[in-house]
Image (cartoon, rainbow, N blue to C red; front, side, top):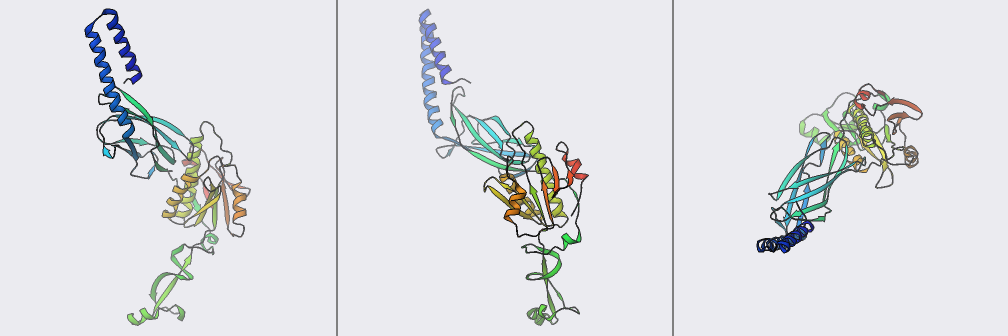
Length: 363
């Protein structure tokens, strides 16, 4: 493909040859080339001003190594456009800082698609840096910048960890908006189930309206709050811009996600806390079920600051000084898990699956 600058040089060479040899045919060819170039220039100038490309990723979340379909829509003054363009795309992992550039040629249909495979966990922004708009012949083009972008969150692969939960953790009492779906408690604000009256039940627990309808005594069994007894602090202090940081970040996120998922799977509600890039402060989210776990992953990957220099443990202690917890775990950038000064586990960044599978966490 040639630009208009190269086309002008070609016309100049043709005109020079026609002048040297005095050839009318070559001169006519020169004028034909100039006329075609001017016609193409007019069309491309209009297309360059009016053509718009938008990116769309139908699935906002994906797994590592999963094929992601990216759709490109081409419009010219609000109507579908079938011309040819070439996109220069940038794919950036805002969590780990990795970036790569790709080129994609879009022909024919107003809507086209291409596939991406992202092997590292993180929040990815797919943006159009520059696009080339071609004329109807596909020979000439003009370039322009673009700010169109789309995003997708690539979730880490979770590896199970052997978590052993003690009775103190299971029966931990505290304020919570999460309730046990199996065990009964004394929180009258949340109903666990209705059942028939048994000897020893209190009169205040009888549901008199239902009892009158059923012709027997029906008791309201209250639920038990599931308070968070543990916090997992994510401290990325020590991360620097160097080769291999993307791989280390991927391993760090996989270890953190695996620890959180395994604690949740063992019925251990907990907090996960980190230093927020957006709020410039320590933030935390509670994890008690799969829904809250995946919600955590989305927020974490979009907001986690890898190059954080603040003391997460100190900021957390200052912010939640009145809080009573049984365990405060800290995962540092070296993939070491501590509780206070006690090293609980060390994970291998090159093979986190193996070290996670070999770890036993006693809570």
